[in-house]
Image (tube, rainbow, N blue to C red; front, side, top):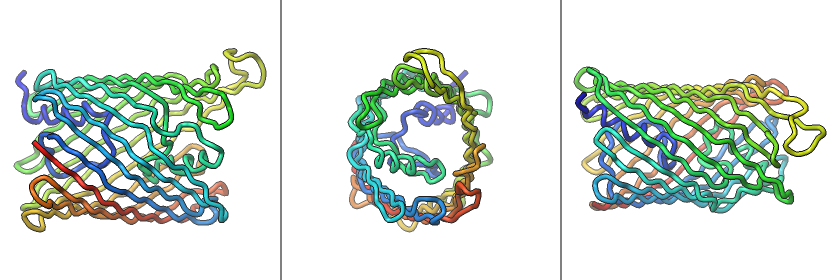
Length: 386
């Protein structure tokens, strides 16, 4: 079968399904260009204020990211990402902080053919993976999926991920399939305790399709499945995470000089098993098993790109998120809207100021839905060379 432009277009998101650098997120209405030699940095600030009944008054994150892309010839490219992060949580008038560099992520991609790409990535443990009780409290709040903080744990130890992606044409459809395997090393998560936590290895498979709709539209859909080996702590099986499924659809279209994208994503986590030990030597079978409930996160939204001149575009966005959990506590919804305005200052430099506000509710331990609101502001600076 001949490879089409639509099939090739699937390679980038499918090949990078495990390794995307978090300077930007969410579907884009604009068509991606061939990557060049580029350096990006900036500042991103997220802040949420919570109702008193939720137990946390305020949660903040300030992130200073740096990302560099270096193409090596026409087939190979290397990406490097790092960041300095400052997180804080205020509870009953007491502030807890977690700060420092996060793990560094290095990725190399090789285009084997117009329809195939091989990717290898390394997570370098430059971040703080060992936390005090106060720092763990910050990481716990910032890791809430519904809130979408861009960093949560700072460090997760070293890991290596390899992936292969293929894309071909099947009639009017472009079809892409990819798989990756992540091998993780252990780290010591608790300050003052010489105990090693080893995350389970991960297998991830994704299938995606797309096709043109009319003269100005593109439909894309994908399904991702993740499977995990058991996590271990102090040499014992600690947790068996359930499989995770992610389905996503999007429709991008053009109206005049503007482009828009409608999208929806659903992430389902199956029940997991928490293994409990009351007696026995390390490595023995668990004395009992506690079932950890499933959870589901649904996201839908609209974003666009509107030209305001030859060098400036307005990119508005509106989205809604809903999270449900078997346990009930922590489930809720969030509605947010914002915009970014990328513009060029010369042929090589681009600035992108951005802002967002959000409002929602979370279920407290008492079973009541309590309010929260948030604000995000940021500025990204990007230099590009050819």
